[in-house]
Length: 98
Image (cartoon, rainbow, N blue to C red):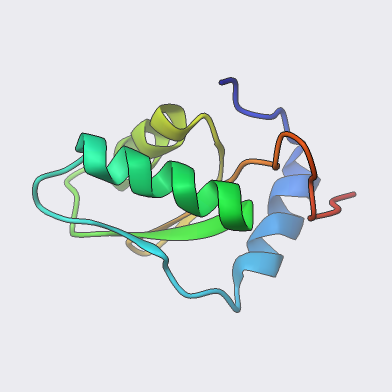
């Protein structure tokens, strides 16, 4: 599954929409496990736009990019230890981004 191509303007708009969201997936010290990938996939299927709480990774950006790649999602941004991921629903996208 390929990540959607987004412009910087679209990424900013999605980060703004994600501001009010709470993290729905947490990445523990075990890192990116098959269970985490399954949780990411389920959350993205249900919500399209999610926040992922990372537990003090050494390289936040690299960890967030690995999360996005594993889920076939677009990394919209990293704020603190929280990554914002977006993947439109394949059959019925609900979020409209300009």
